[in-house]
Image 1 (tube, rainbow over the protein chains, first blue to last red):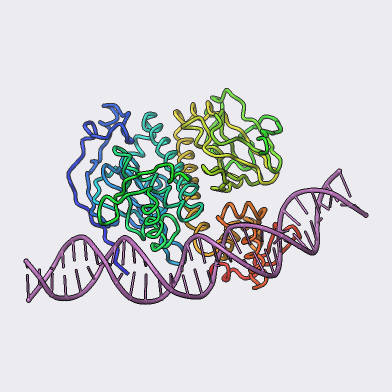
Image 2: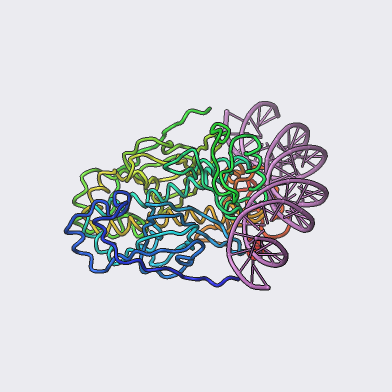
Length: 233
Length: 233
DNA sequence: CGAGCGCTTGACCGGCGTCAACACCCGTGG
DNA sequence: CCACGGGTGTTGACGCCGGTCAAGCGCTCG
């Protein structure tokens, strides 16, 4: 059993007013008065690939906004197997549930090098009671998280192995370059799709053989989508 | 294709102050002033088994609190198959997402005769901006919904057919009589567990044969749990 | 009492899991 | 610079679990 490491590098204190992705995040609509009521600093942090941001059940001091990279949320089942319940991308909030329970419901692990800002619970709790603007944004983030969870179940955990891999390929297209799609380690993909890593590998090879995908690198992480129709069934 | 029916019976207007399950619901903490600010009536409605409460994508005027019965939330996949993404029980809120998008993300169908109260969006929107008490309750309902969704994925859609059926049996225990568990139509159970109805039937028969369950009725809807350990693996 | 629906059970088959060998990439150290 | 070793991805052989198709049974309700 690998011990859980809580590694992070402090990168300074955020000035949210000049945040590059502010229009996507919780604080998008805050005004100068709102900012002046924050009495605890927002820290910028970074994590390396594989670092555990927090563990399932751990008590929480804050939540995170993902600025760069991808993060997986993992539940461990009673019989000890790991299930990836969602993958978060820039703009998503990590650990929303901490607002209500002050604990994290799942484990969060950086899939690549990521940068996040950590918002103390006290800041959110104070502002959400006083700022209808933040209240609205919070509701939007909850709604998005719930929709993502339901989509994950309905799209990715249904149908044949081929269909699952194909839909994951469509779901993981790069936002700025939709011709390309970003895959993960094969056992991570298996844990997302409820398949064994060998089956994932076989289905990817099958899609390449059939001309739906083309490998861009030798590590099997980036593929070009040649035939979108074929992936949509 | 069976046409979608939107059937409901109006059962009068609610007085939330005297609601029997008020401590479980959104309005638990409201005070007299909050109630006085509601300018649209809360209606009591009932639906029969199989009735569609709303359709996926339909525009929403309100959300519902489930008072009695069980409701399934259904997503239809691109290839036309239906997936039950969650089952709601008394105290749960139905259609929370409407608060943000004014549309329902999934289809809601009564599994038995249910009674609900319908809360107009305008009431929630007005109060949530002005009442920190409702704000807190709302967040709790969002958190619960998201946790339920993740649990559903991690517990019920993982492992062998036997394990899935066993975990559903544990999940669907009657709150007041945990010795008993409530099952559903076999194809509904299949759609929850991503199994075919024949497989569900076989695994239930297997659990009965092995002495873990005992049928209480002849329709296969209610079983007694004889050996809890056997269901937990 | 009969029709129809839902549950159960059986036989068979295919897709996916299991186990294993191998290829390839990459970092390390000689 | 190359040899080595570990980690990860790929591919093959084989067996089993669960899907498919079909028949039969037992409710329930007309």
